[in-house]
Amino acid sequence: MNLKPTALSPPNHTAEKAKERTAAIRKSSLWNRIKRDKYLYVLALPMLVFFLLFKYVPMWGVIIAFQNYSPIEGVLHSPWVGFEHFQRFFSNDDFWLLLRNTMAMNILNLMFFFPLPIVISLLLNELSSNKYRRIVQSIIYLPHFLSWVIIIGICFLMMSSDGVFNKLLVMAGFAKFDFLTNPNAFWGILTVQSIWKEAGWGTIIFLAAIAGVDTQLYEAARMDGAGRLRQAWHITLPSIRGVIYILLILRIGHLMDAGFEQVFLMMNGAVAEVAEVFDTYVYRNGIRQGQFSYSTAVGLFKSVVGLLLVIGANRLAKRAGEDGLY
Image 1 (tube, rainbow, N blue to C red):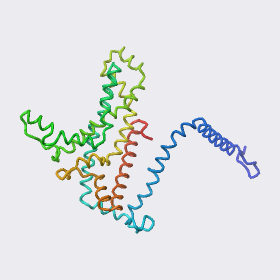
Image 2: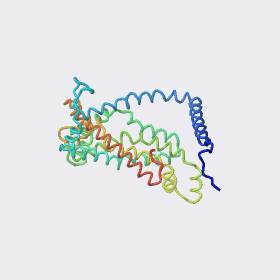
Image 3: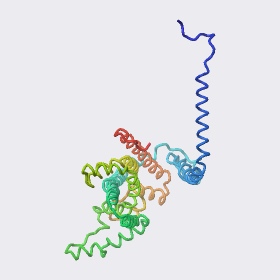
Image 4: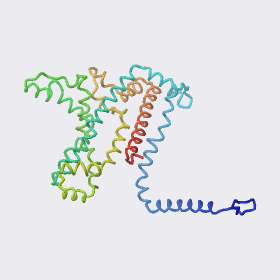
């Protein structure tokens, strides 16, 4: 029997009608969700407008990285130079210096700062007294609300030649140590500052994730004779592994971002060789010297590398069996 359609066969509209029906259902369900959650969308509207106006609209300004931008001629009339600024930056000796300093600071933060909030969260989770836990949390959260100006000011007072640390060293029979002008100690000091200021605040997400772990898993583990350490290792950490991966991916995306304020305030002539990073370099060339196109090219390079790092880390997380960031 010949089942092939002929020219005289009537057209089959079943598939087209099914597609139209599916599209109508999706449109209707989307509108129903918007009507149902209209107050949530209204609540999110200010943040959406903020990101649109201050995050996405200014992105068109990166085109001056490919121009010889002049404030008088403006963006539309400034001459195009292509990748000239990028070539100048990559051929500059400062590029490798900036890359070394930025990567070293962020790798130290990744090694020592990132795991610490996880450890603190596990320790806080083991406290049986809720009152004592809240007190400890308030104490370790407090430095987050201090600005970097205050943090650096405290460090200058404690680490100066007549500061507390040097007085303790002299009392212990040791010689004074140049904390603020020693290039070998600069990266370590920045890492300790970041840990002291932000480690406590970083525990909020991990504590929230730990609170969502099924308590029956702990009860079953206790019945099997597992102690606190084994419960934390075999239950708590695997349960919050997805959150750890997401935050790790975001952290890797900031490997090219050492933070301007902290480094700029700690920088001095004695440690400039190890303190200069991409952010301070952009400030010095873009704001102080007026090289807007060149500094924009440097910033664009840093942003593109950060995006590629996020994409690469997310793919590795998916290969490891995790959901990843997206």
